Length: 353
Image 1 (cartoon, rainbow, N blue to C red):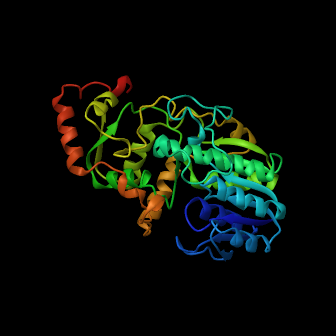
Image 2: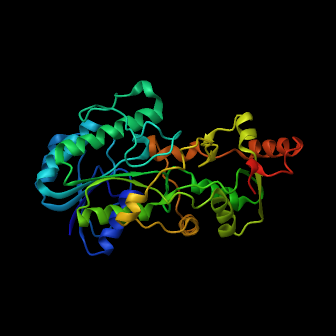
């Protein structure tokens, strides 16, 4: 198999490249060369996807059996890439997001849920009035339409992951919980402790992307862990266990946390009270070959990576988001004291054990 990865130097793109190389594939990567070192063994092509002339120069190096686009965000740019590369590839895999659904995170979702409206030739300013999350979702929906328009439905796969965790995570979600667990003491944990969550390991997303590429599996697929498992307790208690620290989780009622102004999704990473956030049906992807490893394995491997010198990439934009995640120690201590003084600490957080 000859594979082209748009991106390919860090996190999901790097995981795709590592797995493809380990399977004996010939791998070409296309990027600006500014984010991280190239994988050993790939043919690295420098260029900017914003420049059509760079895309045309890249296409001259084809053909490839498959293209995997891990970094598309602006529909017009994705359309240009798919237009230039479509004729020299057998199959096109585009990494989208569950944010494309108008109902996320408030409603349960499946692969047929309503999408944002965005034309395939939209520029980066489209949807500015929708807020950050809404604009991101709308632009990703436009990117999907760009691929389908340029390549066609029979030769393309759209993958819509939810939260992706694992080694080299740059957002600071799992890495914050691990670092906080390692610090010890009482840890504020948002109840209910048995609330199901659906993060997916970056390597499992990468493996499914390669499966779709090699089998030329067409269609759109949600890519999350199965509904109903694991739980927030698996996340928090798994982090405590792997760090080996003397840490005690204190499960706090979610409504109380909201009343205290705790920022969901950021101050307590992965915590969100919206009913649809962890209610995404990925059964079609699972039936098609998606395999999700246990969350505890993801936690253990991420902790090993952190102990081996791995840190979240810092900088501007997507790569600098780790600084926005996590509850400051002083604020956490204040909240724990106020929770204990509220008289609610003796009960079950959120009505579940």
